[in-house]
Image 1 (cartoon, helix red, strand yellow):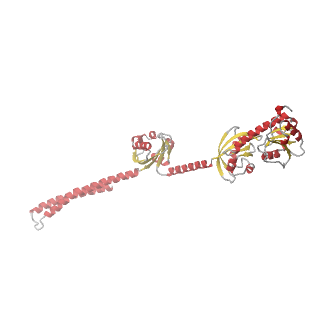
Image 2: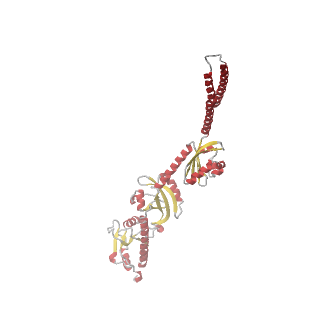
Length: 442
């Protein structure tokens, strides 16, 4: 025990805590601490709760003396809470059940094992372990991502970082009174139990879930988990990223897309979209009705292969103009199968082309009928202007030549014959006008 190799440097005090005043072993422990390099002036002892020591003091190590480690968990937790940076080693008279140490403790020794070299090694390892744990916990606690740890099976929260407390709206003491079930809406619990039952032991992207804040607000999180050992227990380390705004934005976009689709399905115009490879990506009901083709038949097919006749008509050049020049186009074109006239509006998109088609066959037929009637009106007007105007002028001239004062004038007979001929011409022209008018009305 006097070997110089056993001496270690103690930069801070060592605290001996007895579970109660009756516990023995303090003197033996103090002597061994002195042997491994701890000055007697740096050894502080106290007993039970409440212990009256300076909680702002930093300690190299804490040695907790107890008869039965299984019954000491409350005091150990309190010590860990008050001195989270200090390694705690339990010195006990009995081997713990299942050799599981209480939460907050770093190691344990039987009193019967006490000897300077083993005590030295145990303190060194506990100190090293606590330093690593403190480093890890600092990374955990100050991590900008919300993180918490819960026990597998009981779902009880064992630790939580500052970011998660802000995210959920709890204080740390409030959060540690909860379980992982308490931060989820009732509707998520059945799936939560199922996923936890099948969780792999390694890292897992658990996907998107709904969680609840302290104020009962429901929000979306993306969960990542990993199984760890914490405080001697099998636990899950969870990172719960708040993606509420992103998810709700995506849902809003999907809702708007559904509304747009509903509108496109209800309009009487045919509507379809193609991608940059001219493959159909969307077809509405009116397209199916007007073109007499189904979406099942067309979606994914190339436009020019599905409608080869269109490639030889104005559709081809106009659509390519819209895509290549990034301009909207409007035109009217006849399509032979089925025979109909279409009014076309095509708009370039970042993925291809969007096209509205309106069946204007009835309007075109009516327009052609009007145009035909106009031609007939022009024909009637020409008859009136040319075939009647001449005879009328002749008739008026002949009347002026008639000798009213001398009815027996021989020239009057010739004039009457010419008047009769002119009247017959006028009658023929009038009959032609009547025929053309009847033809127009029919």
